[in-house]
Figure (cartoon, rainbow, N blue to C red):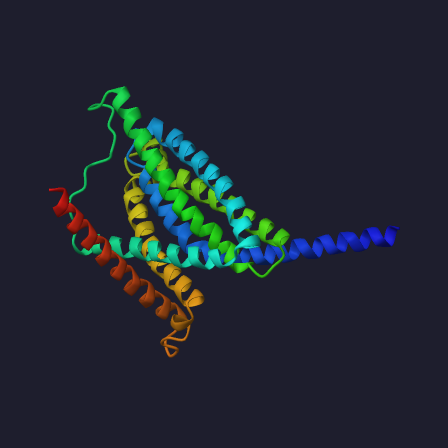
Length: 291
């Protein structure tokens, strides 16, 4: 009886070890989207009054967790009963991610004015501030839903040939890491300037180390968000290219002489600009009809 118990413990340990290894692989595969998720949410959670940044971020985090609670069972059911749908979703998601990446590059090359979304208590009433907050939270949760679908499906794609119990364990772990990790880091990023201001206020000397670090933190916030946006854009194109290469047979064998990372970036970039061109054409056509 005792030996049977220890064999069972050994089997459980082996399963947990396999799950840990598979979770690590799945997390690496989803890292690109997590980077973009980080950049998007750092951008959306900044620009508020200091006292409102964390409440807004908490509201977005709860929405993100709800997104994953909705997405996970649907993904597992598809994997069990209609696995071809996973590949279709991966390719469609790849097109969306490629479009997002290409659009960001297009915006950088051909910038145009955007309405300011920042909130300042001096110019708006409390009701207006809360209304803008609600809109930004809703926008962030919708974006998170799309990215969460991709995170879950890509993670699921790495264990699609494994038993359903392993799929549930691995994908759930990645989804949890995605929520806690991303929003935890975002919380640190959006509070960088606040920490910096406090360090400057508590500095008694004009040229102290505390004040220097405080100034660096204050000035670093917009630069960190811009850097994350650049990294996120590159990651979007790499992830989308990887989705196409691994799920479309023709592209898998295309350009074998190129390093895989370069090949995936090029394919993601080309696909992104094709989708961007189609979307812009539709916008112009329907825009003209509307007028």
